[in-house]
Length: 232
Image (tube, rainbow, N blue to C red):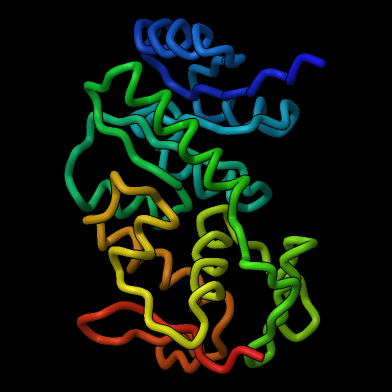
C-alpha cells in the first residue's frame, strides 16, 4: 500500500519563494498547500489537517509570530519559521509563540527538507524506555495515550514540549545536560542553541508547576542541566 503524502502548509507572501519551496518539497514526495497571507494560512490549516506548517514572519496582514500564536490555541501541528529576520530576539519571539524550528533566509532546499524530516521523525519517535505512566506532584503523564493531566484536567503540550517532557522522564533521577537534551529533542544541529531549551523549559514550568517562578519538579541544576524531581 502506498503511504499517504505528507501535507505541508506553506504560509509565505513572496511568490518566488513559494514556487521554490513547493518544487523542492514536491520532488521529495510531499504535498504543499500554499497560502499568501496569515489569515488564509490559518483557515487552510483548520480544514486541511496538515502534517507540518511553514510560516514566514513578514506577512502582509498578520505577523508570522501572531499566526503561530493563534495556531497554538487549537493545534499542536509542528511549525517551522522561514524568515529573513536573523536577530536572536526574532528567533526567541517565534519560539516563545510555539514554533518548533527556525530557518533563516537564504536557505537551501536540502536544509529545509532535512529539517522537516528531522522534526517529523522526532515527533513520531519519542521513546519512553518502556514507561507507560508517570506522575509527579499533581501531574499524570500517560505515554501510551500521549495525554498529560494536571489536577484531572488535560494539559495541551506542543510537540516540542511533549518531547522535552519525555526526555526529562527518560532521565528521571539523573541530570541530563543542556547539550544532551538539545540533541535528543531538537537534534544534533541544535546542540549549541541553549536559548531553545530555556524557552521551552519555561513553557513546561508554566503548564505543569504550581508556581513556575519557584519550580519544585522541573529543576535547574546550575551549570549542568535540568532534572525531573519527585517522579513516582
